[in-house]
Length: 160
Length: 99
Image (cartoon, rainbow over all chains, first blue to last red):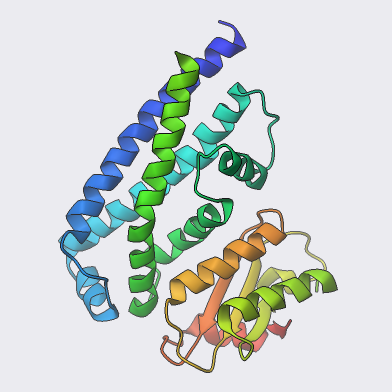
């Protein structure tokens, strides 16, 4: 197999994973936040005491993080390689992805990476901070799944 | 402290943009040790007024400063009247140096 074929195979594998991860994230987001107005500290405290909801919270955060990692650390650099771009630092890749219309903006992407750690209920001891982090995370799901759609359609276009 | 004056000035500017001009800024953790190279950057921001959207604000400052340091990991800890004051805040306040 030529390296180009290998790259194409890797990309189609990563595209399948990203599509699945985006679906799972949307499913958990819908289940956890359905009909729910913005969260506040009191409600988040109740949620973390409830094992069943805490489990869904874990799923939300894990799926959010996995999709972001697959897109940003795997799919994006491989797709840039397919386009003949030199491998660069993560921030440079994000800037290129922004120019190509794959992500909304580098700043928004970096912001949502920073938010991830604050969504982990086991070690964010302040429900005020956790509630805000989850509200922000919920609002960013659209941005992530939109980026997935853009990159998946780029993969489909390039591989066909 | 292994932060250049130019970097410090930019961090101060970003902090003011996000938290207002009254916010106090300190750096703590491994960056204070001149013997260590690289490492994460830990910032402490203290606000005398309650902070809305604390997670977004600390993530925003972390993201902007991280960009300034070529993607290095940056953690931002907040002290504000509406937030819990935990042991980590006490340590950071005690150990931190004003930037």
